[in-house]
Length: 91
Image (cartoon, rainbow, N blue to C red; front, top):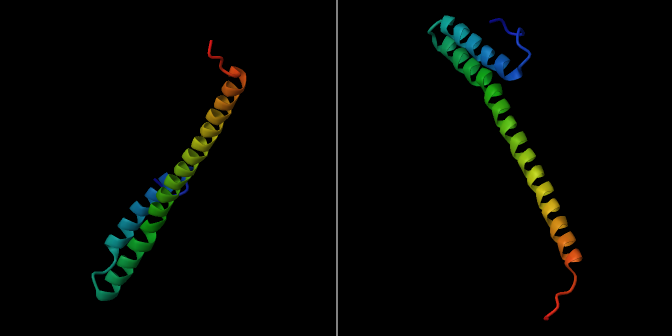
């Protein structure tokens, strides 16, 4: 799979991580090669984790918004029910 073939960002980030693993495996096993490999792995994988975390935050924000809307509906329903019930008689 070539990078850019997929329009799904998450899939593209995963493909990028796979590509980086192939590149890192080809680097020389020297002090400098290991340093570059370590840096590539950390900086190359980071966007995938950041994207996943951001998606979780979007879901949480959406859930909070939905909860607030539902609470508003319930409060309005209770107010409407109370206003239509009128005063109670003791008879």
